[in-house]
Amino acid sequence: MNTTKALFSPLEYFSDRILLIAGLAASAAGLGLSVGFDVAQDGIFDLHIARLPFQTHLLFLTGNILLTALGLFFIGKIINSGTRLIDMVKVGMIARIPLYLAIPLIGNKTMISLTERLVKQTTGNSLPQLEASDMALLLFLSLVSVLCIAGFFVLLVNGFRVAANAKKWQHYLLLAAVVLATEVLSKFLYTKMVALL
Image (cartoon, rainbow, N blue to C red; front, top):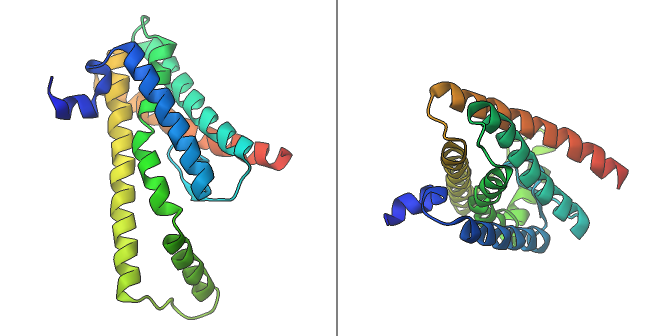
């Protein structure tokens, strides 16, 4: 087994059972990180600092996985009638693992303090004054965030490719449209749900 390929396309290399267990374990860890660091997973690939009750974190995480899975399943069925919903659920869970890795960076006290200082400085008419260490921290967080989001998309695209047997460029265009649509839908639904809570 090629370790690098297995890391970026686990659906090709691991059994359904292993992927399901890994996805559930990663989701539980992601939920714990969200609660512990007060980082809301309020979109398909969004993370924001927000102090929310446990139930809201659980709702966001479950909603992200299900919206992703249902969107992928819908277009997967168009591409290949043999597409299974459970495969898309696994893709939805496994693809989120890189996003979970970013949670401790976003929600740590140093980053929160820096964000609060920047917000205070930008509320006035002057430009924010950043120290070299602040700039280095922002640059580091930006790079890690981009890598985590890229990892999410690599796992999502490769998982979808395997689960739906997608081969044509039109399939990936459909995937991009569904990801954007589910992101917008998740924002709309979560805004409505938080208003009700």
